[in-house]
Amino acid sequence: TKKIYLFTLKYKVLSFKIKPKIMNTNQAPFLPSNLKDLLLPAVLGASLPLAWLAFIILTKEDLFESWMYYPLVIIPSGGAGGGIFFYLMGFHWFPEGNKKLIAVIFSIIFYFFSLWISAVTAFAITGHWN
Image (cartoon, rainbow, N blue to C red; front, side, top):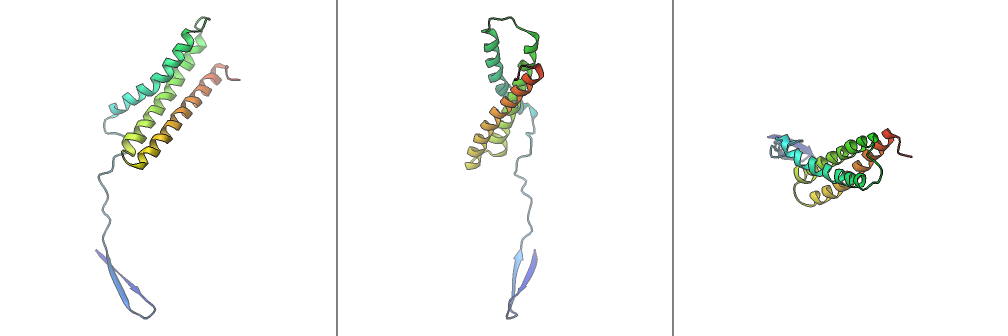
């Protein structure tokens, strides 16, 4: 411990002890120790847009065209990234309290934003984004 002395206007000496800060080792690392923990959120995040796109393509009267492969790959990839972000924010970085609620709300917004950006990217690549 260190002592710090403060002098007041009347030259009285005040002293107090400062305890050294000890690094908190209980914090979770940036990523999970087992990367298999990210597989399920990625699959769940990608399954929603993949099922939606498959439904749209299968109910379409026209034939399946080769340009449709790009949206079928890129949009679920954006959903997988959003699902991983949702898992990390809600269950790994902020696991409890009011911070978790804010993290989950922000993660849901980020998930739909990542789906939108990946859809814009996929349709811009294929030339179907006007």
